[in-house]
Length: 151
Length: 246
Image (cartoon, rainbow over all chains, first blue to last red):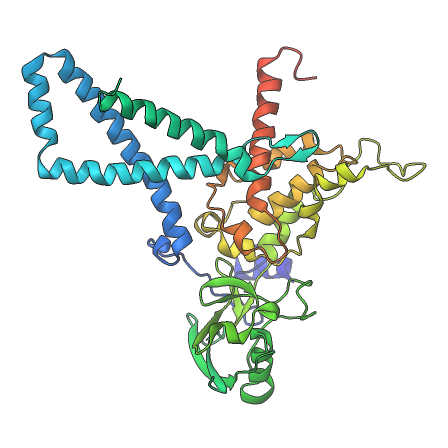
C-alpha cells in the first residue's frame, strides 16, 4: 500500500508514515532542561559531575599559590591576604565540600570499574573501595602533620 | 487508615489530545492490592477506556512497568499501601513514545536488543555433537544478567537515554555482556562494533539508577563499566601490540 501511495502523492513516502488516520501519532515526551531536579539520585549525579569544576578551580588556585611563592615574600603575603577575604573564604569552603564529595564518589565507583574477580570469586565492593579510603585518610594525616608543624 | 486512596492516572488519547493530562480516581485502599489491582479496578468499575499493559501479575512478564510517583516500578509488585495516604501518580514509562494512556511504544528497545545480538554466537554454527560443558563458576560469571525480563524500567530511569535516544541503553548492553561472559559464546568480537561506540557503552555516564530500579536485581551499570574495562584492554591489545590484531 505504501508503494502505491508514493506516486499518488507525488513525493517520497517512508515505509512507516508518521501519521495517518489508522496510525495515530504517539506522544513523544521531551526531557526538561532541569531534569536533574526531578529526583534526588539525579541531583546527586549532577553534583558529582559538577564537582570536577571545583577540582579544576582548586588546581588553578594551587598553581597561583606556587607562582606567588616564587615571586617573593610580598607577593605571597598579598596572596594570603586575598585568601582571607570573605568571598574567597566562602568559595573555598564550598570547594572543600565539593572536593570531599568528589573524592568519596570516586572511591565508591572504583569497585565498579575494576576487575574484582580474585581466585574465581568477586571481591565485595567494600573491600575494593577500602584501599582508596585508607590511602586518602593516610595522606590527609601526613599533610595535616606538616600543616600543623607537628613534624 | 482511610479505606480509599486517590490515584492520578496519566491519560492520553492520540486522536484528541496534544499531550497527556492527569485524571483522578478514587479506589479502595486494600492491604493486599498492588497498583495494578487498582488500575484493573478503575478499568472494570470506573472507566473502561483506560489503556495499560499487563499480563502475568507476578513480576516476571515485564509488561506492567510504569512511573509511580516519578519512579519506574513494576505495578504488579508495588503495594498501594506504600503510598498511603496518597495521592499516587501513575504515568507511562519515561523516555518512550506514548501510544495511549499508560501504553508505550517498545519498538526502539526491541530494535536495540536485536542489534547487540543477544544469543550464543559460535564460529561453527553446526549443532555440536553433545551439549556444551559449563562449570558452576562459569555460570556464575553471567547468571545475574540472565534474570533480565526486558521490562525497560532501566531505560525509564536512565537520563542518558532520555537525552539521547540513540543510546543503546542499560538492558541491551547488560544482555550483550551476558553473552560475552558466557563461556559457550564466541561472538564478543562481533558485538564490539555495536557496543564499543559512543552510542554504546561509552555513552554511559554512570548515573547508576538503572541498577537501583531493576526489579530482578540485575546490575546493568556494573555490566557496562566492566565492559568498558574489557573494551579498553582489547583496544590496547589490537592497536599497541604488533601481533594483537590476529
